[in-house]
Amino acid sequence: MGAAEVIVGLSLGHRTLRAADHWLTEQVTGLGADLVACTHLVAEPYPHVALSVAGPAAERLAELADTPPELRVAAARAAGEHAARRSGRAVCYPGADRMVGTLTVAELLAAGAIERVVALGGTPVAPDMPVHTRDFVRPQWQAGELVLVTMPHHAGGLAPFEVPDPTPCCAAH
Image (cartoon, rainbow, N blue to C red; front, side, top):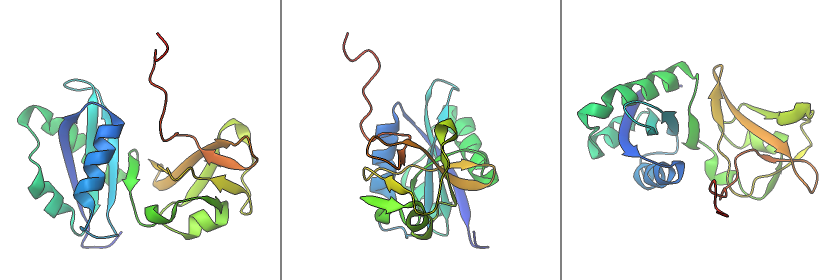
């Protein structure tokens, strides 16, 4: 990340990842392709989703939304985690618009900001392995890298671990 980078934490009380994703996507459109906007699950002062945005235009986003006083600690925590590249689920990032269809691991890594692909269950990851993106790719900061966590896909290859439309808990009850 460049010297002009700014990291802003926001906490607006979003109760779901979907709501936070939607808000981020709407707000960062037009602020530049070099932004990295993340969600962070926080527990204080109540369970909600805080946000972090990094990039030269991040301050413009902070001007659009004012974090309420009771959520400022959560916002600061999100910004700190993003700055340390320790945690955060990237919603908007360089190359996110190219994470569609089926790509090989090598194509996925070359297309944007994702630095590594890992698979659950010890599945080996090879550069020519297909990744069925389902047009929904949410990498996470882990130990300084933007990492896409995947799982084996029923058609062969891999798919992102996070699914686009998860079934809510207790949906059948």
